[in-house]
Amino acid sequence: MIQSTKFILAALALHMMLSANAFAAEEIGKAVAITVSVSGDGGPLRVSSPIHRDERIRTSSSGTGQFLFRDGTKLAVGPNSSLVLDRSVFVGSSAFKTLSLKATRGTFRWISGKSGSAAYKISTPFGTLGIRGTAVDFYIGAGTASVIILEGRAVFCGNNGVCKPLTRGCDMVTANRNGVIGESRKPAKTAVAGVGNDVSFPFLVGTRKLSQPFRVGGGKCGLSATVRVIDEKTGGGGGGGGSGGSNDNGP
Image 1 (cartoon, rainbow, N blue to C red):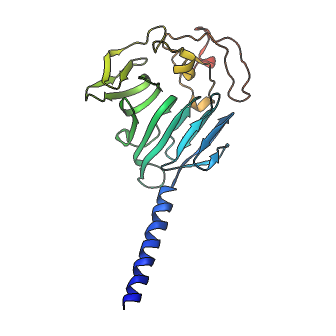
Image 2 (cartoon, rainbow, N blue to C red):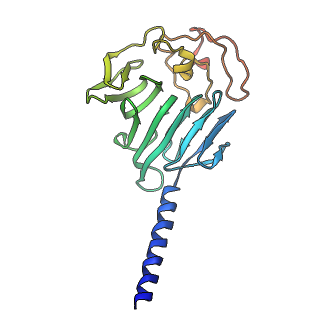
């Protein structure tokens, strides 16, 4: 009887372990464009590589990844960036009840898919970004996080519990570890003090070119760059990064 009980308990424990591993490895999207070096938990990612719940994605100093989630959400990850695909709960096969990310450093673009707007949440060391049918660029540095809304609405809640809405295109909010700094506003000529726009918001100013589905019209929110444009397909130069240019060359 004791031996039988031990066998049953061991079998149940094994079943639970296998089920947990399968759940943690649930595929939630795939890479659609990779430049230079982007890695996940299983090693380097390539075009069509699946991405999974609980996976950490990292980029090299010149790496960029573009990812498409199962509900149509698009995520671009810029150089020197790191985030975890933290939590996901599906409603059916192509919509999320919950999709949350933990972004710890770097620069990103998010374009919401067809899941309900309340499904999306992005956590940072400086607060939490709530998404409401939105296209948004955000940057996480050593001491601050900055968010610029491109389309739709969002709200950023700092670590002190103070929340700031982003309701108009090019609204920007910045926070440090103590909470939100000041009011929502249009970005200054340099969005993040002491950091070049080509580092903090490379997708917005156009120094990192994205494939067409990841682009958002409406200009560059008054920002400009002083470095050459990087073509995400070739990694080569594509001309100057000044504040002018048409929407075809914009974000």
